[in-house]
Image 1 (cartoon, rainbow, N blue to C red):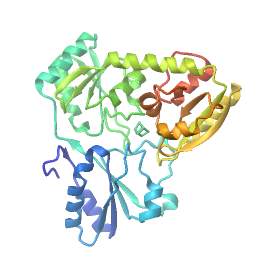
Image 2 (image 1 turned 120 degrees about the horizontal axis):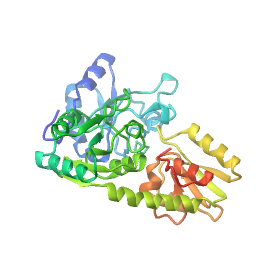
Image 3 (image 1 turned 60 degrees about the vertical axis):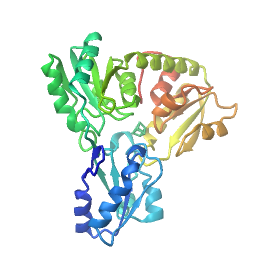
Image 4 (image 1 turned 180 degrees about the vertical axis):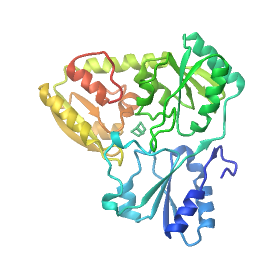
Length: 348
Ligand code: SF4
């Protein structure tokens, strides 16, 4: 389906599944950037599936880690949650709390594939920036919206003389070359000089820099231009090191435990607890679904000297980098507890 949308979203799998299973209630869930098209999707499904109730989930949605599955199940009892625009969240970095005892709704992940590919001029600019950073072996990184264009980009770059690496897929989770804001494992293991990131914004490419410490050139299909984000990555890295060094003397910590479906990580919480005990630190566990400044400030008594966030590791780097106490990712907390500044551990 396109209907004037800048993304292609194929609703046929939803229609087939709902018909074959006799579903009566479907919830549509998507990130904020796609919500303006939600009514079109709901209308199309209602036309194709008479008698089926289609609801749009309005709350913010930050990723497949954020299904809000128990809440939807308890309140609405849907047969199906259609999660659009993200691939399934990797099971090995979350705890599997979906489909409790097999009773809950099924989840269907639908890609939203971007219809834009950068112009030849923008690709050539990206090639120049890569060469300017001394990159000859280049790895491709992207998000789920652009995975279908990775082959084309690889061919374009090969045609310009680069040796191109495409990280393998970890299906059913990540496609070839795909990154998440909290999962760069495919790219960390690649033997390349630097990366080209196909996509918009700075969230994923800056995370890629922190995870790999290699040059990152963004090729933005929305703005049709190439940008070297390496310098911005270096700046962010320096801020993070400062935060780690600030936290080295902290004796009393808050360990923030995530309550979202994919952000509850008991294995990680336990690892940090054990490490704090070994290093003579005290801690209090703080459980939170949506961590914002107001929530953190309200709990932030003088007892706490530092925090680590086990839910979304981008909260410390993107939202709390200027908080008056150190708020660290789990990897940074390990660095502070062990008293080292390198290697930089990101994000876990
Ligand atoms: S970076 Fe944060 S919001 Fe994005 S997938 Fe990871 S945990 Fe979820």
